[in-house]
Length: 376
Figure 1 (cartoon, rainbow, N blue to C red):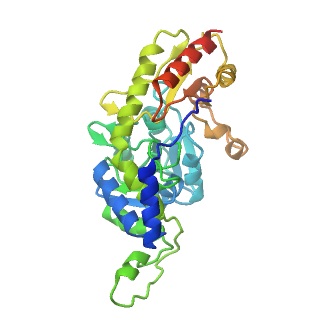
Figure 2 (figure 1 turned 45 degrees about the horizontal axis):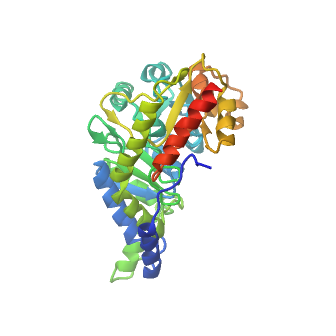
Figure 3 (figure 1 turned 90 degrees about the horizontal axis):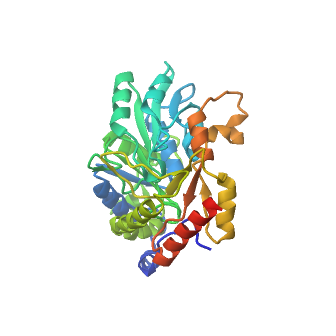
């Protein structure tokens, strides 16, 4: 079976975790600080705050952005459900906007049409690593006095107009889940250029504690900490951070290899009738976190049947990006949603295997079986 994805972890990461365990620093310590500094430098952001996962990063982003009960946040429904859930966590309401059918990213014009006096922020998603139009949303947010938040769970290493994702706005949230381009097992990062956000984020991730464990441990004087506000246990461990540092060192190399695989798919599937291949917007680069194919109405096989045929042939696949408004948690809330573009894109798209290292033989087999299964 050729899997849809798998993490690229080696003896290098295993040794980093091993060595960190033996230092005695297990939870948030010097490796976390190092990972934050290196990630900020890589993205071009002023600051980075390591967190337990991207969902907790999104939650804290809502808090420092001032989003609360009674507010609305515009976001795509076509995203993993954590995007919308993070808005609900603070008592606000997600307002779902349509996506661009070629990139699956939130549509700026549709998002602006949904702004009301209750709107506090816009949460954009860089779908499967493909950058959204950040400048368009910055202009909308400036015009309407809104906060821009980026869900960059899948976008580590992608770039927009010459700058890495993470450098363009004040609240950008990343994931290091095993399905992502680099991983720490689980984990997240939030980058910001706002010093006030930075200090409050560090406070909130550790129970609102005025002085963190590392500072107390390294101090030559006794420190009595205070808890300045109700916070959370959203810390990353030093073991995870040690793995993340080694993964980050290879991020550009990993993306280059993923790009080679994606380019081969683009070349060798270009002549397959009934499909639309991924579209990369101008002035953007993607990390190719996933390779999604849209089945046109004239396609001879239904998406779910195609997935089953591929599975029978030993090739894993996944449905396109979910739509949160059709999940039980949201469809039973009494609200009516009209999102035909999002629903069509979700129902007619399929994700095929792409990971590093992926052998030439496996790539060729995926291409061969996709062509055979879609034309059978």
